[in-house]
Length: 205
Image (cartoon, rainbow, N blue to C red; front, side, top):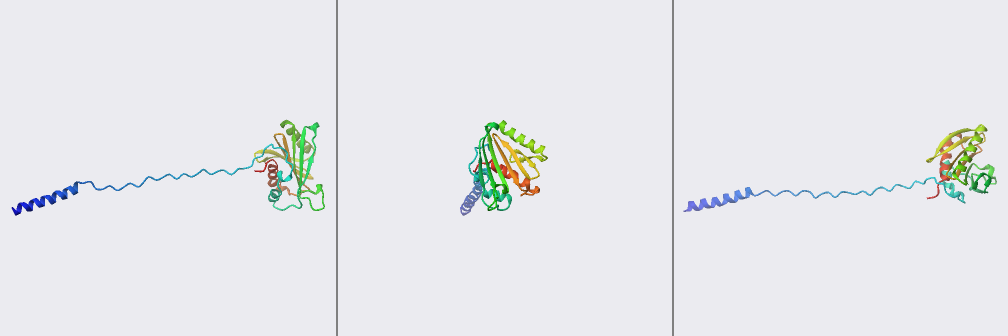
């Protein structure tokens, strides 16, 4: 009887061991799904663009002094002087503004280093015609004529004996930047004049 009891006890232990063997092993938990990281789109900085805008009434709205000095790499003497022109119906001109920069103390307009001018006309064709006529007049006078980029627009660099200028038109408006009295050397013309021309046709942000 004791042997039977011992056998039954061993049988119970064996069954318990077998049950433990047959039960499935606990599965390791899968890592939680990763939450995708959403990166907000980068907002592009606004790049001012040349536009056919109404004529400003202040040289700071044409080429600000700090922009002029930064472009030239030096500080010009004095403040800009403004001359507002009159309308000329005979040539279709409806407005004109000229800004004179770098006039030394006790000097006058002819002593300016840089002049930036804007003119408006009755329509785009008239504006383009005025530019074409100016280019041809300078060519006949022996100036060197070169087409250049002004921002996304085109302009014409005119290299004369006494001054160099960059002219062009956008819509009904013409622009001109003059290098007076050989202030800028020829090697720096393309680094300065197109920048000033683009700025003159770019309204403040």
